[in-house]
Image 1 (cartoon, rainbow, N blue to C red):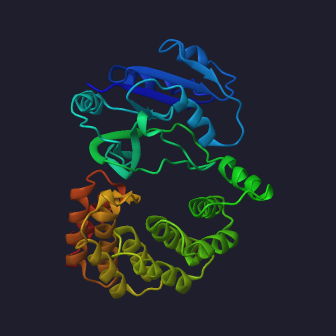
Image 2 (cartoon, rainbow, N blue to C red):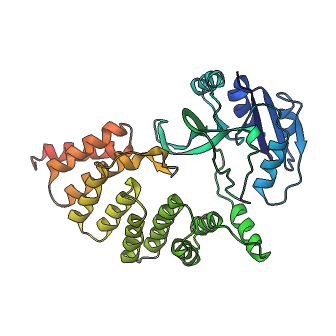
Image 3 (cartoon, rainbow, N blue to C red):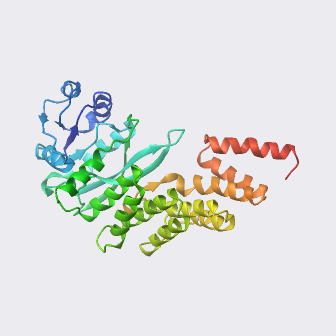
Length: 360
């Protein structure tokens, strides 16, 4: 049976650390906590689970901190979690079973669920390199949005890790780190440039984000999934500042990298709705419902974009065109994906009112 070292970097995580460690402690053989400067009771909480607690001076570099944590691991495989991650009982049991059947995998990819709908179902996910063989000497890269490049025998597991953040604001920490890196003349790698552009968008610096993301897309280097995502975020930027045609062109540029993605087509539909071109919007939303699902391409997966979003928007489009029967049909379809959705439930009331008026 394979053994696992859980390696975590933490700072001021008193509100979530116990929740995380309680969820995973039965599946791992060693817990290593690297504290980067907590001023609360984080380390005292960690002491209830392990005596392998190390201090690390924070230097605005997540990779360096994670590599330090990995250097302390002694088991066959190394697993990482953030303090606000949770492993359900079912997935913890799957991890224990995996330890008995790991079959010399070098990297185990696991789905990372980072958003949930009103009924608690997964709404956004992507695969991450979650369990890595220690003997492969894994190295984290990137000051921010750090990652390990998966190599060797890569296995996609059905084990899911859930991210349940309790934070209510998105800080400028990541953006500040990138700006310091640029100021210090430390070159940004293509992946860094993509995430720098995304951070600029998150902080409403749209014109600057447009410049950074456009340069990233034009550069021949960079991962295809990041290119596609950059096209989408570039479109968001153009849309926000009112340049709808530029937003459409940015989305369509993504088709040069791969077949259309569901979220890209949904956003194309949204843009044509803004333009009042409902038949064009209907085309893109219907196309989504025909697309194959490929969650293992490494890209971000907005689960709602594969069913609920196109259906609820088709409902709106057909209603605007006066075709209430088609509108109601797609609202019913949307309800099959998210029966507790506020929009779906409000639409039911709307259609009931129309029925009472015999408009259909």
